[in-house]
Image 1 (cartoon, rainbow, N blue to C red):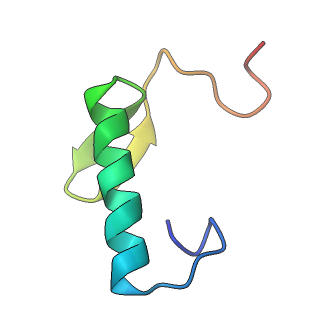
Image 2 (cartoon, rainbow, N blue to C red; image 1 turned 30 degrees about the horizontal axis):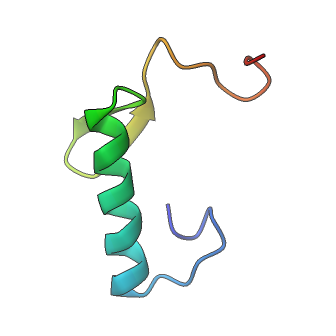
Length: 51
C-alpha cells in the first residue's frame, strides 16, 4: 500500500498506513479479509462511483 501512495517502504510509513487502514475498517469503509489485506466494503463507491 505504501508504494501505491508514493511513500517509501520504511517500517514507520508502513505502520502509519496500517494504523489508518485499521481505523477505516472500524468505521466501515474498508474490510480486512485477512491480516493486512484491505478492500473497500460493498457500500463504499469505488473510483468514479461517488457523487
